[in-house]
Image 1 (cartoon, helix red, strand yellow):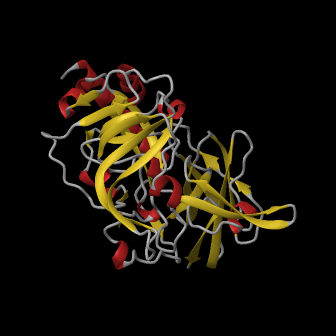
Image 2 (cartoon, one colour):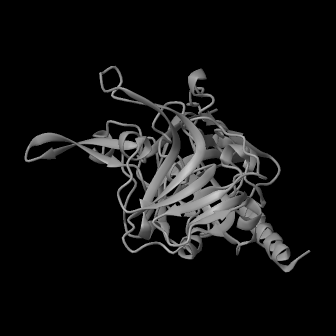
Image 3 (cartoon, rainbow, N blue to C red):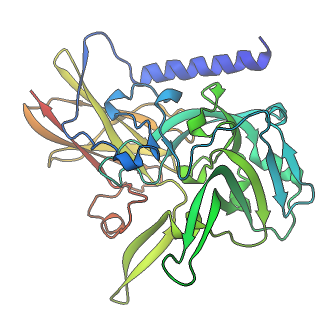
Length: 382
């Protein structure tokens, strides 16, 4: 084995051990299922949304590839790695075209990052579109530097191979139909974040087809929509990029009061928001423990749990693994028989608190994106 492989093996062994300690269990452990199971994914969305894991089945810090959720906005392309290319063009002095072998030959970087769909918890059936993985690939920033970005450039646009039909001004004389590739953009300064990867590996294996094979963008700290899958082209532009997924879709609409009058405010979905979720309840020898996860753009400072209408109680946080990973938390519980409600809220190190459902930032939201309100689960104790 090469030294890099030995180091990688040691890193992943550390991940596995950390995963086991975060969810340490002994024989005789029983998982108490939630009584409020999510609705099934509707048939019309089954190709769009795949592999939503039950929270009760979450038993590792790192989510296995075969249990990681995936979202498709258009088709799910099957790409031949031998003919695939990644082109970097536009407002650059030295355009680049990389084969997969050439991409893999660049210096390899890794980041552990919790990826969440911005629609998670926004619909009755969409309750676990989040997972944590170890991603590996080449540095996006170094690749852009090699292409020599022009001084007047504003944004970097990432294009996927996936494509589908779009209609503008449907049903009017100005109706226009066209085929579009999925694309998202970010400012030059955001694209140059050293954590961003041109990712080709997920948990020490090639990216699964559903998660972007052979290459995807990994942008830690951003919602999943920004992490473009099946990446094929990067274009540097000197103007703002606006397509369906930057200006018409993935837009959060909230009602706000301006001078005593209601105003609808629209913002494009971008960075992760502070969040936590009760994952499961275990019972061992008559002793109960609530377990969950917390994540967000900033380090998690605390998690608090409320049972029914009781007071908030501070949970025990597992050690932080890395900057962009979720943190496991747990709380010992002595329940009485019957139905109970379990609510969690995360607090980051700056003091920001995960909002309650009646907080205006949640209650006045008209679209289901960015639903980071406190999550309540129900359980029946025999």
